[in-house]
Image (cartoon, rainbow, N blue to C red; front, side):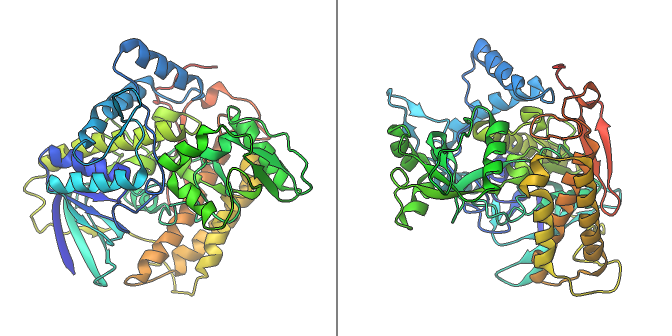
Length: 527
């Protein structure tokens, strides 16, 4: 077994992980990143072109930007968090100049708000490395380790390339493991299986906003791509008849009308009338989108092509680990959460923040958590090198509670997909459907918890299956608890917003899931 030691251990290799590691290193901490894949290609940022929430520091501009976002947050966002995220983003991106080739803005200046995903992640890797951050690629984490006082003191995993176990002691751990798209096929999301949620809850952390996981992206039927082109699309049925699909400015109506159209057969997109400049912009910031069409011999802007909705789960949804302060600490000492691993309700409320706000959140939560984790690790100085025994916290897939049995993992994943991604169940929720989903998912979880066991590298896959089923259960439980309609969460049996629920819903527990209203949430009055 390999032994690793660091002040701060960062789990993940995407944008939030990179910024967290950089921030912690700048604060003087020794930092190790452990990534399930290769840092620079992991996660949904790598094939994207993230644009950031980019507001100059003029007070009126920032006040106006926050006010506009609050109007679409359905009362659950926090203006102080919004201001903090805007400011951290504005101050941080220029730091990339030595590592990232910024484009011109056409006015003699530099275009800094939007960065090309592959180069962005490559730049973050170089920046982190220049500060002494140690990056361990292909080192998936299997479980967190706890100190005797219950705080998180490290993690354990498996080195894919050397095929051997590793264990890390750390003063603090940052979970930057991304969200969960339940293996829907969403571009770049295959490794985003909710691992951080499972490990966090096993350590005693709570989740928040998991009911706001209803998000889908439109793409060609054969492959998930980015969605920018569809801002200029019209839609047709199999007979070539135009479909009355509302614009993107009405996201709920847009999604429901598309979902309804799929009930009757295939749907086709046509971009003949898209703005001419879209083709140029697309090749500049989302080149992977065009490549998907060119490889198939389809002209995106001339040929009509079949489309499909890909579930985005908590990636463009807002749910994640609950954070309890401005350093993105969870309710478990020594454990921090960033990016899609953390709840984004503070800046997005009950709706997806969209690309710009979400990218700013990934960046700023990473920066804030890095500094916070470095400070927490400093307080642990002297304990990291000690031989204090660390308790392994992993359960499902590692330590079954019953007799080991052969579990059909593909069937378990399919069950999670059917209960949370199915359009009828997700877009038109009610108590009957949610209780039925809860029962199905509980049975699957019970089988996994009792009988699933794997060793070595196979344990990584087993834990991914457990994490997806667990995440589906938390999403469904939170949706059942929120007896109203708010933002992307819509209940047929409770069709209006209720003042009683103008709070976050906190979810936790493994075998027995509990929910509660977070009445301390600093929500804005909108009702």
